[in-house]
Image (cartoon, rainbow over all chains, first blue to last red; front, side):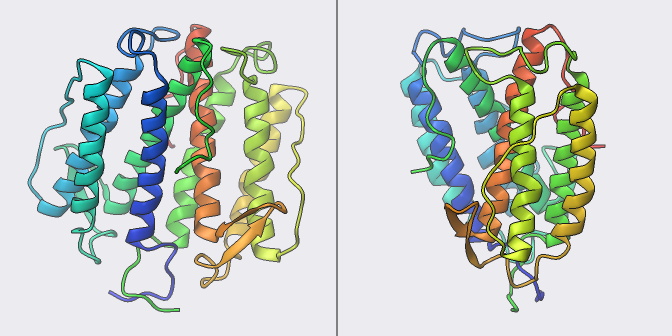
Length: 157
Length: 157
C-alpha cells in the first residue's frame, strides 16, 4: 500500500513504546518490594497487578496480530520484584521480535483480538500504549503516597 | 512524501486524541466542584492544575506546529468546574481546526516547540497525548480516593 502521508513509521511506534516501557520499568524498580503486591489507594489494584495487566496485553497482542492465532487474555503472576523485572525484560525482547513481523499493510486492517476487542491494528496498539500510560501513572500516585519520588515522566533512557 | 507504510493517518491520530480528550472531560465532570482545585494525594497537584497543563499543551502545541510562531508555555486558570469545562470545549474545537492544517509532510520534521522541546512533530504530539493519559490517570486515583467511580477507561463516546 502507498499513501501520501505517514504520521510515523512502524519502527518509530515501536521505539516510542519501548521508551515508555523503559519508564514503566523504572517505576517497578522504584517500588519497595514489600509494597508492590499490597499497597494501593482508594481500593484500586496494587501496582504488581497493574504491571501484570500490561504484560498480559503487550506481547500477546502483537503476537496475535502477527500470527492471527486467537488467544484468551491472561495474566502471569510474579512472586517478587526481581521476577516481575525479569518478566518485563523478557517481554521487551519478545516485543521487538514480534512487532518487527507486523506486515506493512496490516496496521489499517480491522482485527478482533483476545476473542473480543475489534478495531484497526493501529488502534489496538494505541490502546495497549494508552493503557500502560494510564496504569503507570497510577503507580506514580502510589509512589508519591508512599513518600517516594517517581522517575521523571520525560525520562525514557 | 510517499511511503510504503502508514501506521495511521493524521485524521486517525486526531480522532484518537479527541476520543481520549472526551474521556478526560468525563473525569473533570465527575469531579466534585469543591475538590477540583484542592484535593490531591501524596502532595501532588490537584486535578484542576493537571487539566490546566493539558490545556496549556494541546492547542498551543498544534498551533505552533502549524504557524511556526514560537510561544512560551503558559497555563490558564479556571475559577470553577464550569469554566474549566468551557475552556476544554473551546480547545476541542480549536484542536480540530489547527490539527487539520498540519501539512502532510510535516509529521516527520524535527521542530523545537515552546522554545525548548526538540523532536519530530509526531513525537511532540505523542508526548502531549501520553502526558494527558498520565495526568488523567492520576485524576482517576484522586476520584477513587474520594470514593467516586471514574468513567471506564475504554469509554471514549
